[in-house]
Amino acid sequence: MSGHAPKSGLPYETQEPDFRIIISIIPISLVVVVIFTFVCYFGAETSLSHEMDLKQTHGAEMASQKLEAFEAQEDSSMHNYGWADKKKGMVRIPVHEAMEMMVQKSGASK
Image (cartoon, rainbow, N blue to C red; front, side, top):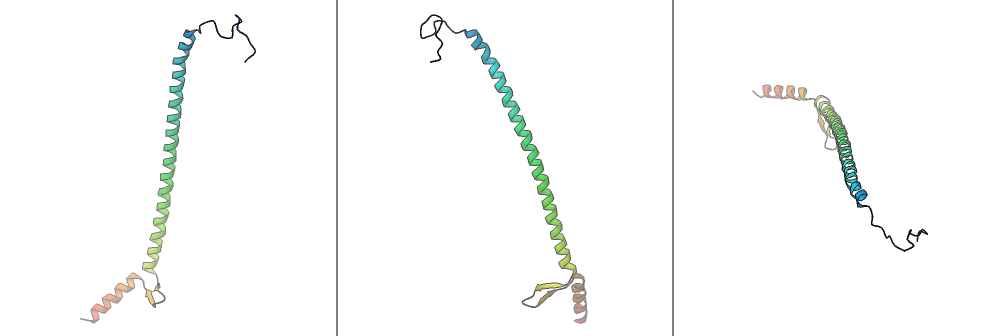
C-alpha cells in the first residue's frame, strides 16, 4: 500500500473521478499521437528516399566505371597484339591488320 489513507478512513475511494478531465485529455492525446505518427512517417519516407537516391547514384557510378573498364579492355584487344590462347599457340592481331590480310588474301585468290 502507499501508506496514505483516504480522507474518509475507508480503504477505497468514496468520491467519483472527475470525468471532464479524463474526457478533455483524450482528444489532446489523440492529437499528439497523430502528430507523432505523421512526423515518424514523413521522416522515415524522407530518409528512405534520400538513401535510395544515394544508392542509385552510387550504382550508376559503379556501372559507368565497369563499362569504361570493359570498353578499355575491348579496345585494347581490338588494337593490340596478344595471346588468344597461349596453350594452343593462337595469337590475336589488331583488327585493321586482320582486315588488310583478308583484302590481300581475297585479291591474291582472284
